[in-house]
Structures are given as C-alpha cells and as structure tokens.
Amino acid sequence: MLNFKLELLTLPKLPASKVEPLTSYSKGRVLGPDEKYYQIGDYAVIREGKQMKIIGIRFFSRLF
Image (tube, rainbow, N blue to C red):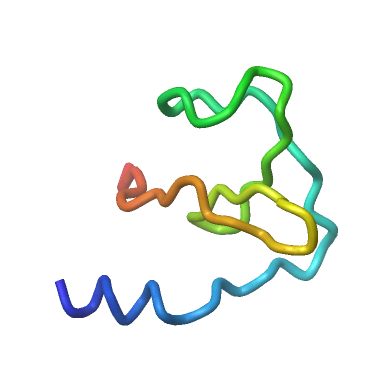
C-alpha cells in the first residue's frame, strides 16, 4: 500500500511524441461517448482549462 501512495505522489513521465486525444472512454460512466481524454502511460486524463485531471489508472497489465 505504501508503494502505491508513493507512486501517486510522483508525476507521470510524458511521452516524447505528441499525445493525441481519444474518445469513447468505456470504463464506467466517467465521460460521454464524444468527450476527449488522453492516455499517458497507465493514466487516463482529461483537460479542464489549464489543468490535466486523472480519471483512470490502469493497475494491472497483461503479462502474456
């Protein structure tokens, strides 16, 4: 649990290339089908004004 909290305190590393917006975030009813979000590493984020807010975190990746 402590490692999880420490990881949340660190900022995600931004990719070197341009991040394109996506639509149709399907996990729960967080966004409407036409609302844009960004996938940066394991984080799904939205832009609200000048801020980026996390709307989802992928905890597990497939190992196969």
